[in-house]
Length: 194
Image (cartoon, rainbow, N blue to C red):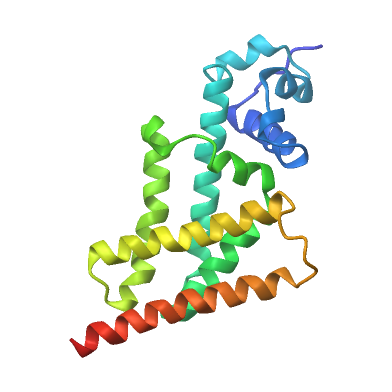
């Protein structure tokens, strides 16, 4: 193997994402990334702190990309339209980037401050979308958790082949999002009546 000059963390991440998307995050090892980059594994230590460091960088990058995707999806939208856009963007991100999405969920947020910051940006974005429904903060956070659970659960089940019944998956996503929105609308109406 000849040495690679100018190797950057972006090069490592690109190689790791390709491996993760093609196989799984579990296939992302120092050896597999080094092989893809045609370098020796010890060279990776110039950029990451071992396999754990590489996976943390991958998770952080995935959260940044997910945030950008979600933020772009809600530009110029509010209320129900923003929830629909956010939901479809989330599912689409997980479908288009299966390994990177898996990396997003791999490292517990509490394990790394930089990952915590990226995850908090997503929560803040979804809370801003929830502002339309005039929920108290505690209730809004419950709804953010609920939406994440629905979207992550759907994405994970789909990725792992958990939907064996031949029904249109996009129709299922739409139905779930409309049910979630109806719950938000019902809560908003009850709040106004009080």
